[in-house]
Length: 263
Image (cartoon, rainbow, N blue to C red; front, side, top):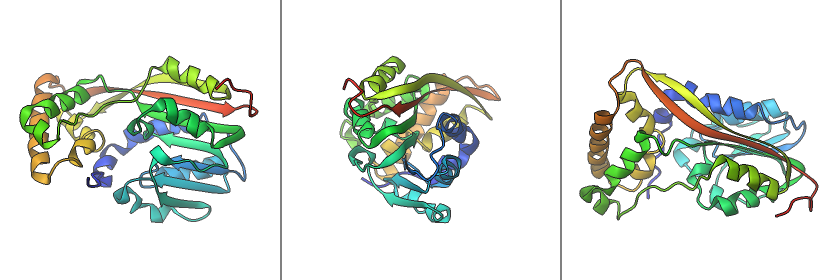
């Protein structure tokens, strides 16, 4: 499957997408001289901000997308570097902060993922993650309904995007069981004011729809996209500005002494 991420498309709503990053970063305490990893770093523009705010000596940005990482070179240097890698198999240790903004929702099996990330941290290490929780919004459900339609289902080999995310309460319990003695978990609704409902399509083209784009030929994806646009605009109110509520979960934890957790 091809790399379907398009940095310019993703950046069309840069201000709206970056606010949760800053809210998550506000939960992280500085680690002067420490080591930080940014899982799902994208183009790296926010990895640089993360590095400077934490005071780390080294910050590693990790992303699977070559297209995104192609723009990271301008943000490298001064203790920041980037590498291609898959969060699903990431197991490097020795970090003081494991940070991930809008990336862990792409990884299955959170029951195994979060304890594995916790294991990369030493005593006092911090885990901070932000994940979209808008999978029940029509912008998402319509995408999956269209994928199930016969002509798309065949091209997709019956694939429909699933979501591994759990309830906020589950993450609070998971952090405690993984050895995090301090934690902060919250569900936050961001209300975005878009020019019109058609911009919801443009938003999703930069994120959710990439999962279908990478599984389809360019021609088949354009047919899928046209059907998605038609179905979605049928159910969205034709209001200008258009209000798009977007739920996200933000979580932070600080690791206690090893052996102090119950997991």
